[in-house]
Length: 62
Image (cartoon, rainbow, N blue to C red; front, top):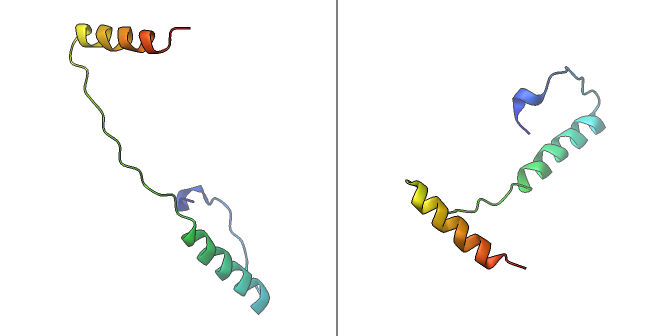
């Protein structure tokens, strides 16, 4: 969660609450999304776009 999304103040008091809060932070750090690299082509002309759409229509014809 981004820190900019925290818009309220909250109070943590007592050892039990502090431990639960720390545990929650530590657990959230373990649950990070895996980054997946992707490749992309830049379409530089109308003709390229038309060809891509033609191939897409062929693959998805019912």
